[in-house]
Length: 411
Image (cartoon, rainbow, N blue to C red; front, side, top):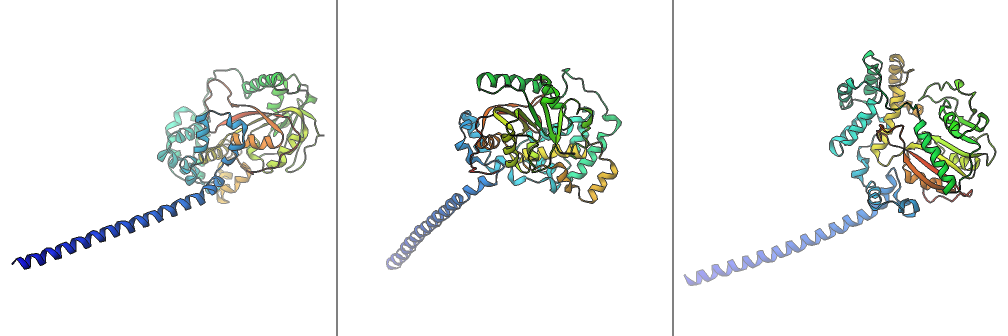
């Protein structure tokens, strides 16, 4: 009996030792595999790090070489860098205007990540609608239908009698006058503190019907032959400009894409370009032309969308889509359906959006063309005006150097 027991104990001991060895071996091999996996993941991460920033709407490498960016507060500094990450840029959900799925993409972002996106989208949609229609408009927007169906439903609603109502204004100032008063005040400060020259000749690029440059000229005490505006013959997002009503109050010159402006070098003391830069295809050419016709120490005022994320891009596109497909008087039931049959998204050419920029990109590009950053301010028509669905800013630069610096980045 004892010999049998000793044999049993020996076999149990052996099996126990074997299992222990096996366990140790398994743990070692698992650890080795885990280590190699980690190394592989790390190397993969390192390989992709450089590529990520190139895909984003803003190239964040330029932050490091931007003196104006370094003056920003620490929290802003961190935020701009965080916007490079996929979870904040919303790259995964981005849809182009041609895809016809921008409303759906923004609703997905709102429900999964950021409900503020939905409120911005709703604010954009309610811009010219009776508040009584809010419920109906909300249902249309979140329906996840194709964009052309949503635009068509909103267009019909926009032209119904129920939508005719009067918004009581808290200000008696019309149009862009409040922001023009802001601009004229800061022109005076730039002349006093930053060495900007007196304004005797002024040019507005993309002047439309000329109302903006006429009222700006009045604030600056300029005569008709000192106020100039340039633009294309027609821009279909806005339809017919009806420019002939105002041409007796300013000097208008027609321009063509990629053609030099019809002015001598060093002609103007001030240039403004309002809601135009995102439509410009040949960006480098336009900046060079502005620097050419502007005098040294002259000022340039830019009013444009500011876009850091793909959600900003889509909201800006939809705003243009509203002007073309909903608010446009020329868009009737017949020609809307005609556009739809030809694929409405070919009308991207009519919207003509090339690229939206962040202030960091604008600052980088203008500095390269010899401009010095003065200030930026949220575009606002009155106190009661919120930031808006598609952010717009006023930027001021001074031309301090006529020599162009070679580009290390392109946008």
